[in-house]
Length: 189
Length: 189
DNA sequence: AGGGCCATGTAACCTGTTACATGATTGA
DNA sequence: TCAATCATGTAACAGGTTACATGGCCCT
Image (cartoon, rainbow over all chains, first blue to last red; front, side, top):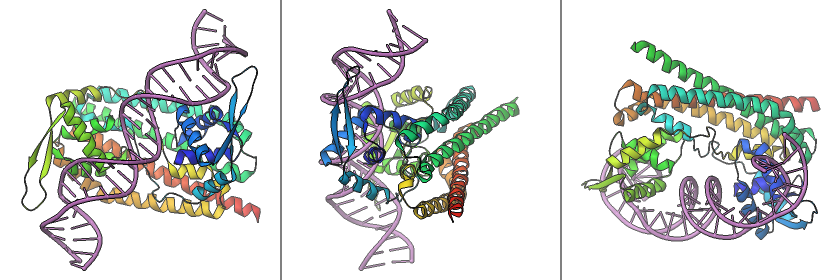
């Protein structure tokens, strides 16, 4: 259901193809909700069956024809209704494979643990750099479908800030864990 | 698959019933991997079909009989194999309903946004307090099935630290967002 | 008397992932 | 010439959620 509303939400800004929706997902919503391309196509079909969107095919000479989806008034109403009801539970489901491994890390060698934390830190630092590099690009993409009204950009700003802050914290966390692992080793010698 | 390995992992410490597994999940693994009770029963059945666990029924007079699951040597081997292969992707899938609403928050009133951030902060602060209060209890529960060897407790310590640190950061984040919302309002008057 | 804990599961449904299938254009 | 991008989808499977079904004990 939620993915359908995410799609509807984007379609309130502009009519888009499944492919374009997927691009926008990767650059914005992906920070807190992931969706694969095939999933998007499936949900678009479901939305059309409900009458929340309509589609029409645009022929193109040089590229494959595309199916452009447009939100209907029923879709708009359903979206607003969904939007106004924030979820009760503010924490939600989790699935973090890395943490799952870590929890059982005692059954692994300490050197393997350290290796994994180092990899974690390196990836998070690269991620941070990528966020900084992409920030302007993301804003440009967002502006192609969001109007430049200040209040509409709030959501994106908040989302980006959260991504940056939590990423920094996770790097710090991993560094502290690494320190612990090194100190324990020192104590043993 | 991952849930199956989480269950196997817990069963390496002790033989447990589906119900008991669910309790332990709620107090430990739930920080980074959620599972419902019915899911646990289903995965236990799947694990038994694969020969990774065996079960035997213990009759009880005062309470319902219980089915106790024990890991087999094949199960142990499969678990160790899984454990030694950390995931490539360290970020993983996300589904955060609150963020999804927030992203489209521009279509909502500013007062509604503020209300939601206030709720967010209150819940996160309560969560922090609950973590502090439960810390000792959790450790006791963990010790009932984990041996007290220091290195085995590492995983839990790291997991708890991460939960505390990210929670703190999220509170700070929400406070900053609230400040932004208030300042913008001030500028308008 | 009523709610929560103990304890087990089944069934249906909804979501998410992966593999398959096709094929032209553009840039390195 | 090779990979990437544009562009659409289907099918099968895996994993997660919700509702249903049952029933005694313990505490307030």
